[in-house]
Amino acid sequence: GGIAAVDWSPTDDFIAVGLNTPGTQLVRVYRFDEGAGTLTDQTSAYVGESTAAVQDVSWKSDGTALVIGRVAAAGTDFRMYSFDKTAVTLSLVGGFDIPASVNSVHWSVNGAFVAEGDSTSQLGVYLGMTTGTNDELILENVRTILSSNVRFEKPVRSKGSCILNGTNNTI
Image 1 (spheres, rainbow, N blue to C red):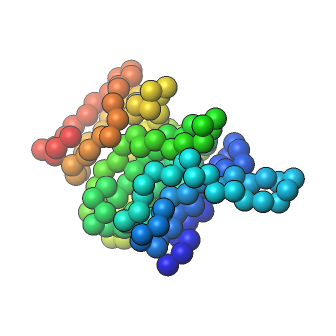
Image 2 (cartoon, rainbow, N blue to C red):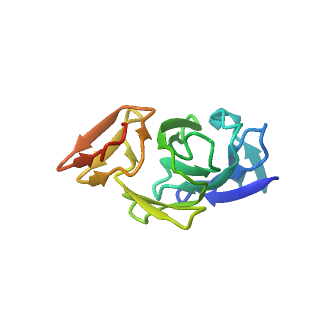
Image 3 (cartoon, helix red, strand yellow):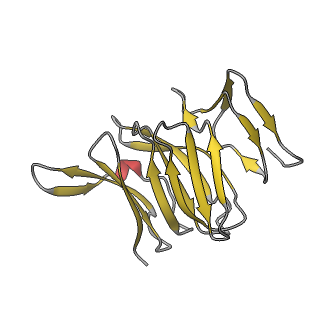
């Protein structure tokens, strides 16, 4: 048990940590004070992740969102949170179940895509996972084909030219 993943916000002094010890707050955000040389657990960012081990965490390039990958059987193995830098809070935007443990997650450099790798050696790339001003999921100029059921925790909005093909899956 212990720390499974660490990612430093590319724009600030926040560090996201994923833990794999059930029964604890498994997603944490710390603030690093360079002058004092201290780390402070930002309890205002707790989101109640306490049952499924977190395998990986990744900040979006502008520091406004965090994705996490969790072990299989967690129900929603891939989750995305918006991050409010002022209030230092995470808010669940959405997530979905992947039929395996999500071992690795990472945002693209431009923040338009998220890649995940799972325990069955499958790689997935997800388009348009960005947050708007109301913690909504925005799909912008994307073609999305679902290979499994998807559950959104926040409103979803499309911009530009979007195609969503559920391929007989539940949205």
